[in-house]
Length: 200
Image (tube, rainbow, N blue to C red; front, side, top):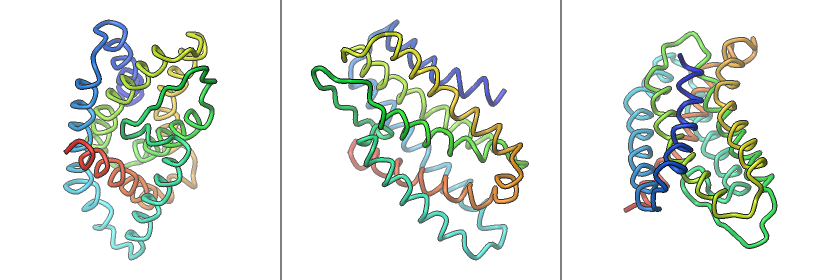
């Protein structure tokens, strides 16, 4: 169910792009909603969940997540929160691909743990739909070949499911699931606050 929902969220975003050709306003509204949802899930569910473990270093890992997302933003130019810049004669954006893939993989890791992360799953799904819309629009308007764009989107749709599988199978990730969830909280706090700040 988790893997299907994560893949479908990206495919739904693409379907919206190719089927309805929405304007930037629709994508921005969906992105604003996803930012508010990410922030509320982080504060109301994820932060209490990691702090109840009694781990005194949780705050450090949340700050680490903020820092990691700041570094990823440098390479993606803010694509995670709606910034995609189209230039003429653009080549395939390798840095954007790696940054978005790492981001998606990391946010999927806590989904593979032993805890019930249904709220986190829906937060990721809701966030991925507008991101997929923006990515689809980006590729439609750029001169990147349809084959490369399709491969990018398909690989991107698999990153969170791969993170989820890794989070449930790799012993290191299972052992440090609380710390990794705290890192993801930091990433979500960074993304959601920037989305809400820019949308206001």
